[in-house]
Image (cartoon, rainbow, N blue to C red; front, side, top):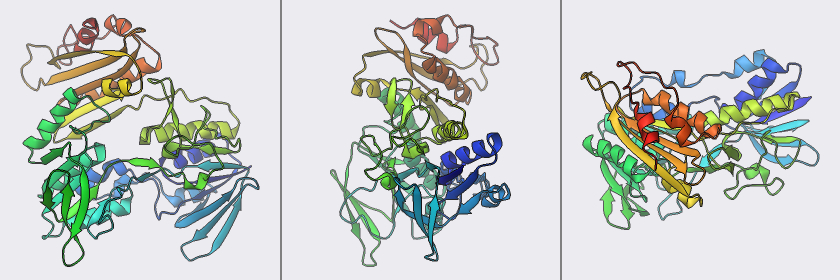
Length: 446
């Protein structure tokens, strides 16, 4: 069987690896318009902010490794059309050579693309986006310029907040804009996000929330020099747009069923409306256990899992995805936040009737005074069924990174907040208190 995979990042790689390791003997062709593969974009800000010196280790797979296993790799090759009826992929290389690849099974792993605000001046020099390695390189080069002193970051989600930190670490003045009233509004309720806002402000980042960009203005050399919002005009030397992503699904055209944002609709086998076409990663929908329905959640961890599921099904083993919770985390200037499932705000927007329980306590036992950070927790649950559908944690302690996984599993297994209240959680003073903050938050539920 011949399998063509379009896209060589996390989801496409996971699909190919699953097939190679579990179902050998198939002909596999991987196509990507980029010159590299497997770039961990979540590490861009860490590198650009010089928390690591070089980006080399942000790549975890090489084309030659796949070629050694018999995979045909076509990088810097742009797919122009897919003939779904005749099962053919048409592409063109960097040197304009035309390529036609027939397939038995096709995997669309084309990922997501940045949302480009349609504002006057959007095409000026000095306005950047941040997703690909090359875009990280471009921003890193800008940060080395002495004349680039004042940077506007538009969008205070994960990527915007992280690149704002990176710019500050590089000695720049940073203005962070968002239409929402807080940072990280897609993942955290306002009460939680304000903790991150305070952290950003304390580290010298100028916050402009509840503020909409309206226009970009240029200097005499054609570079962006001002950002105009609904409240004021600001002088800047560089703009980084981080307002979000949408599915990169143009190749699906009108031939495959799509979600409201254009993502390719798939079932729990990652199969599209065409039984010979699978879609994985950020280009596809995914089943949310919190929502109990398909939705769109663009995360690298989700991409890997969806690729594994597709690989098994293409290989001949029927395997359903167990769904996801959209578990995520962020660490900015040593302040850590993690979340999973739905926030109260997100749940209500989706029409769910929810309640929540908040609690705050020290991470370790009260009689340990050194390195004993406070932890803030919120558990979100359906009011009637009491099923847990979300959780948020915030602390300078890194232990919360592991604790959020328990809530992810609770959502997946449809556990109630009352079951959590009686869960057997271990106790040792070095790690927690006899009345664990997670237990107390559950016990306090109305």
